[in-house]
Image 1 (cartoon, rainbow, N blue to C red):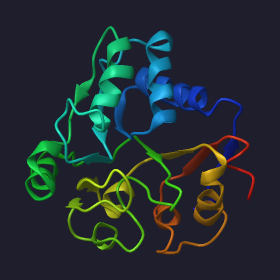
Image 2 (cartoon, one colour; image 1 turned 180 degrees about the horizontal axis):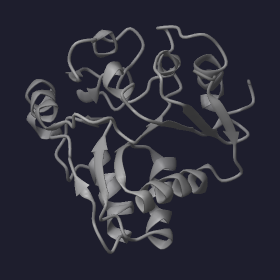
Image 3 (cartoon, rainbow, N blue to C red; image 1 turned 90 degrees about the vertical axis):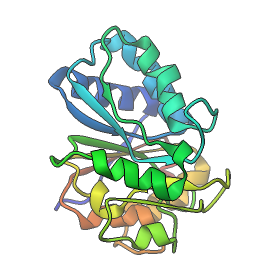
Length: 222
C-alpha cells in the first residue's frame, strides 16, 4: 500500500467538505467523526450538495451520553450537517445512552457487511483515532467490530467505538487534524512505521488509501 498522502490546506474544513460532497454525489456509506473542525466541514456541505438521499451514515465512535447531550457526536452532525440538507441520508446512530456494553452490542448488530466507502477520522494529540486510545483495551480488540470502555482523555465519559479491524474495512480513510498541538501526533502517525503507542499509525496496517488533511500548524513536524 502507498504511504499516507498528506494534504496541507489553508482551509482543512473546506477540503473535507469537498470530500463529503463528492461522496454524497456518488452515493455510498460514510463513517463520520466528531470535533470542532469536522463540525465546521459539516456546516458547509448543505450549501454545496444538499441531496444526501443516496448516502448511509455511520459513526466511528460516540460518548455514552444521550443524543441530545452537547458532547454527542451525533448531535454535532445533526446540528451542522443534517440541518442543511434537503434530502436526508439513512442514519445509523450509536446508542450511547445504553452504556458501553449494551450500546456496543446494539451497534454491532446493525453494522453493514459491505466495506464503508469513506471513513472520516479526527486525530487526537495522543494520536488516538475514533475512541482507540494508546494502550486501551479497545485498541487491542481484534475479534469484535465494536468495543465499549473508558475514555483516555477529557471528557472522561465511557465511549463506544469501532475497532481497528472494523475501521480498516474502509475503501478510503480521511484523517483530519488541525493546530500545533496535533503536530507531533501527525508526524508519529503518518511519517513513520506503525506503532501501538500511536493508534493513528495503525491505520497504515490496512489496505485502504489514507489521506491526511492538515493545516500548516499541524504539519510543522513533518
